[in-house]
Length: 22
Image (tube, rainbow, N blue to C red; front, side):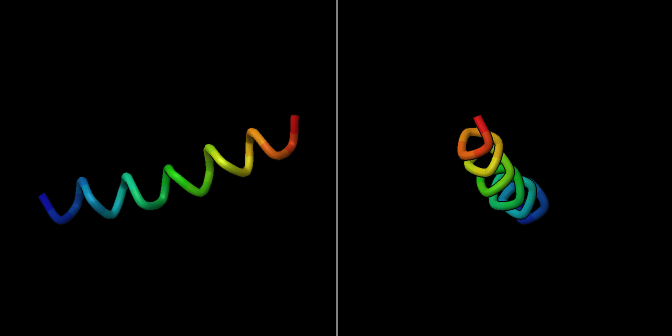
């Protein structure tokens, strides 16, 4: 469960960054 949380936290910023680039 902890690993999944860490992945979600890491993916969240990445998605936001991708959106900001567009």
